[in-house]
Length: 248
Ligand code: NDP
Image (cartoon, rainbow, N blue to C red; front, side, top):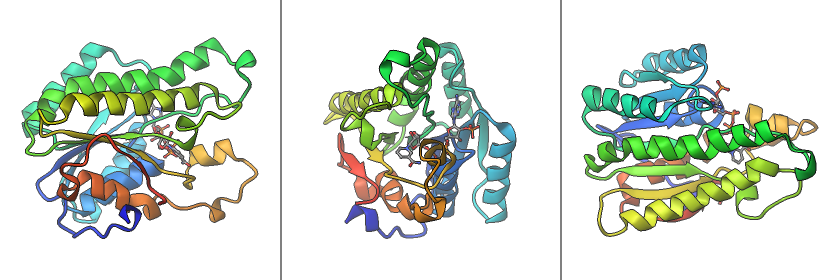
């Protein structure tokens, strides 16, 4: 199965891949894993020291020199995203992969109590920023022989659950964005678009959502990388519009 996919070590050689939320959690491990498989990674995130640490780890491991894009997706303007795309164009001339991974949990509370401002922020980071970044990067993805866009969903974005509020709604929207874009590119572009539900994974977000849980009992980000590698690499060419569970 895909969650057991064994990637050749040179799977992503020559590929340029942008990862959002690359400074921590799943994004950090995904960026390092892509680099370990030959990719040049562009690390996008809001906390520069975290991105610099990932940069150093990739260089120390002998990976291709990464790039850092410090961006706070909660307040980014559309023009800035276009400007970022110009920068990627100048530096690399194309983009082969885009992993939309950055996300926030928001509040865990009934809708009746949910703060408007928090709702808006969750939708901004998890949905609107992903749309803007996708739109800005599409021309560069078209320049790739086989561009792969991966969105990050969640179990609560497939079946709603009490008290998950904007997070659940944002993840439903994410699946909708994935399906809509996938249908647009189907048969007319070299781009493919899919989504991954990581499943319960040992990160700060998971610990915030389940404070009573022993983190040692939760699957690590490293464990779920086969699905990320499969969808970024050329073995998934032709796979489009599909939703994957990284834990099988
Ligand atoms: P973490 O909270 O560990 O990491 C999230 C990353 O997103 C961090 O690097 C964070 O940056 C970045 N980020 C958050 N807000 C912004 C922003 N405004 N601008 C730029 N970057 C931002 O979460 P996970 O690694 O657990 O989650 C990764 C993805 O997986 C998310 O989309 C999440 O919804 C999804 N997911 C996770 C599950 C899990 O069990 N862990 C289960 C299902 C889905 P910083 O470190 O600077 O805050």
